[in-house]
Image 1 (spheres, rainbow over the protein chains, first blue to last red):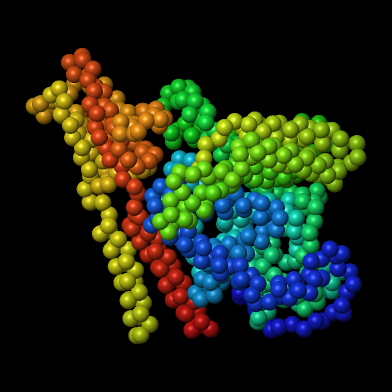
Image 2: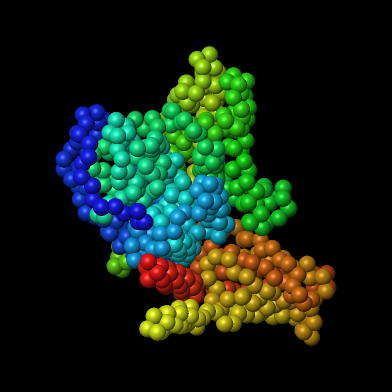
Length: 464
Length: 176
């Protein structure tokens, strides 16, 4: 880090104003977070597993069905990621092998240049566009179904991370460029863990070592200042601020999921846009895995007069992305009648209310892969030692059970989204407009939920 | 002097590494030929080994004297060869392949997406003097091995980035 200072001693008297449910009140937990072993104890084993998975993807079996790398990435890690984000916020980002690689490269050859202004300004838009492009290319070139394709994707990210780590300061990649970071940031807002500074202590602080770092520990890798941080979108729970704060101001506490979304002071249109396109992406992922996808494709080929998949899928993709965006805009227009707020502001603010349903849709979709194909992780691992599964079923539970779980998750997500819309209306409007605005957004959430449930009720094809 | 020498060595190594992978690259295409009813059908894949995924190819239809057919209205489909299956397997619907006219008369280009390895049949349907004819071409799709060109390319870029970063860092610390 560029701004490392000498270690600091406590410069303020101890304060009794810390949060009730602060997990750092537990001495063992606090000592663990403050120790040198955290987060390395998670980072090193995960980096080793990641290296093995990359190796398997690029030189292992060419068929997804037989490749441990494919199973480990797309059947285990990818479905678990949204669940981890809900439970632990962006904790994954501190143990992520790419982030760790960034830190290692930076330590040895990092030039620590400041983040370019355009990245600060357009970072989330770059993330939004990259996320859409990767989803599109996955379908067109079959990245998930092709181990080599998955390997190339990981290589591309590795190269970009090394470039970013070698050139820029802190975790520029994670904060401004990682397409998963954008998704993780959005989901972490609905997550159950938050790290914050204690305002009563922070306002008297003059050292800001949480941000600047000390000679022992670098400052916040995500460019966050706990003193002013009011959301969990960028906090990866690395523990550096806990280690650096001389006044014991930092708290890590549990909270009601979605609580952070109830009072968004400065809604950003790009965050709302990412939230709504993720809904579109979940639709695309579902539609293309349905057994009726071939029939849909045939009809589309007849309408467009071409069998070229690049064209037919691109049209499907654009429609699937445009419908939720158009619906959110339309809802904003109707809500304007009640709350007299501009469509743009409604879009930005109430886009955040989509996040719980996004998260539910993402978990529900991937639950199918995790539970219907979960055993493939074990089978492909056994095949590394020459033990064949002899075509045994990969399912952990039956399809009706998975479907029931998917419906329950979507229902919970819908309730979360409706309640978030209500709280957002309450926190930003006068009493008389809250009901009308909430009803309008409730209808939108129910529409999106019904679309999700309809898609989950149809038979789905497997990845492996 | 020492620094310059190390720099030159590293750059040589990077270039050697990147170009060494070319040895693994495909050098020639794979032609598959069949003669039926006096028509010589040749399909040539761009890559030496045909692998699952998208494969570019050219196809030519020549009569017995080596001249391209007039208005053959060529259509191509690809399907997995299920003739050797023990039964009970669901037969996939043949895929239609889009064709474009090539630079020479009687030569067409296209892209076929083999979704798995194994034996495939490409069926060409064309007209000869107003009569529809069909030729089946057997294609063996092999399991995709590692692409050392791509791996080497990425490694070369990574090494280059690290080396440049190390040099700039060193320069910066020397200045300071």
